[in-house]
Structures are given as structure tokens and as C-alpha cells.
Length: 329
Image (cartoon, rainbow, N blue to C red; front, side, top):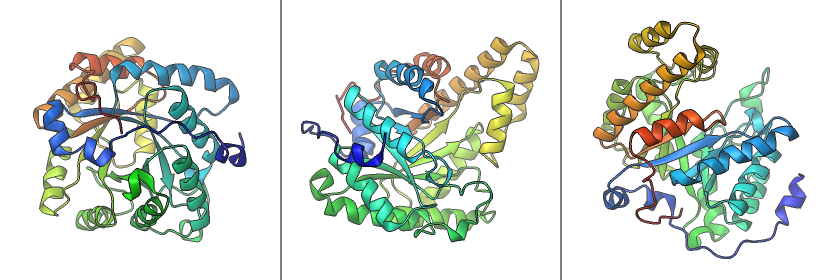
């Protein structure tokens, strides 16, 4: 589907949607008596992948997520497919899509056109990321935005111009890295970068996936000391397989795999179902601990599959993310 066709998509009837910053606030969480849950998907690589992916997306409806996010390929390489999936979710399901949007490879005019597309179709929340350059590309030669904070600031201004949320602008999420970012080994500088994104207008933080809750709890305390006050949503991924584990280690550089987790996976041996069950049990334990420590929300990296994530959510008593308040974001 080409960009021009999508811009002319029919506008949906007006919906009285809550700003995601408000839906994730401490007041809303107290009224729900539970953290939010949300899920991430990525666009299919082939046309044949659309039907099974959309069945998976629809399969999450009964878990009542606060939102579902849609990834954006390195340098915007999945741009049109991301837009297509976001708009299809917006039109055909009750789920509220949150598109990723990255600095790399984009001019201000590019971002402005994308934001106009989303505003015209009542997609009113964005996850603003620096992103990764395509393989072999030089980072500083790509795009008008050097840092995610620059992108956040631009989205804030454009959202107000477009009248999103009655002129308040897009709700904006940003990324957080509890175990550090490989390009910024100085952990004090990492928090400075996160604080800059929040000061630029971010409404909430979604973390990189992690398996060590102690690292998350310590990082969250450091965020509080740095006066970072927006809601923090913890990134969780049930390990699907040993191959999946190895891919995570490559994609989420710096993520630590606790010895206890590795021991459980080793005990499962070559039994694929046993490995998956071990990964699910670990994620369940993570989630129970996060709830006990009053986490604002949990964001599940689904790998475009529903079974493992749904097993985790149901084992800890979800759905209850927004159904008790009938919250729309």
C-alpha cells in the first residue's frame, strides 16, 4: 500500500479517547488497582504473512491491553508496512495502536507527513526512538534528528499544530534501558539522555526487555533520583526457544541472562516444549514480582505470537488492564 493512498484514508468517527499519559498515571492505576499490559508486533515480511499476523493481533483483544505497539525497521525500512498495520489495527479492532517512529533516515518533512497521516486517522500516540541505521550505514549521515529528544520535541510541536487530543498533542513514549545502552557505557550519561527525552515532552517510558528484575528495580530508583517522574512500563519477553534466546542476545545487546534462568533452560535440554515452559515460568515470576513492586505497566515483546504471552498474562490474573475503567487511549 503506497503512502499517498493511506493519507487519503477515510477518517474514523470521533472517539473520546483518554490521553495515554493520563491512562498510565498513578491516579488511573490506583483506580484500576492493577498495572497496564501492552503488546508489541512487527510488520510481516511478506504478503502471505498478513493474514496470520492479523489473527494473532486480534487474538490479544480479550486481554484488554492499554495499547499495542508496531515496530519500525532500521532506518525506516518497514515504513509503509508499519503504517499499513497501524491503520488496519485502528480501523478493524478495538485495540489502540502505537506506532514506533525513529530519527534515523528521516527529515523533518518526512516526520511531518507521517504525523499528518496518523493525526488524520486518529492515531494519537507515538513511541519516539532514535532507532538503528541500516547495516553498513553511517549513523551521523542519516536524518535531521540526531537524538530521540530532538524527535520528541518535534512531535510535541507538530501534534499541537495538528490539534491532536484537542491541541494537547500526541501522547509520546520513549525507550529506557535498565541494563544500560551499549553505545553509552557511562550510566550517569544514560540517565541524562533519558531525562532529556522526558524534559522534551515524553509522557511515558517503555523499557528494553530484561530478565533480571533486580536491575530494573535499581534503575527505577535511579530514575526517581534523577527526577524522572513519568510512568515506566517494563519490557517482558517470554523466551520461546534456545534459538530465540540467542537472537535476543544479539538484538538486545547488553541484556543480562541470570544464571538461574540459564540453569532452568539447560535442564530443559533439547525438549522444545520444556524450553518454552521454562521461559514462560521465568516471565510469570518476573511479572508477579513487578506487580508486587507496584510497576506502572508491563509491555510484552510477543514475536508476533500469542500463546506464550497469553499464558503469562492469564497466570497472573489478567485481563484487567483497562476493562475495569473502560479506558480508551
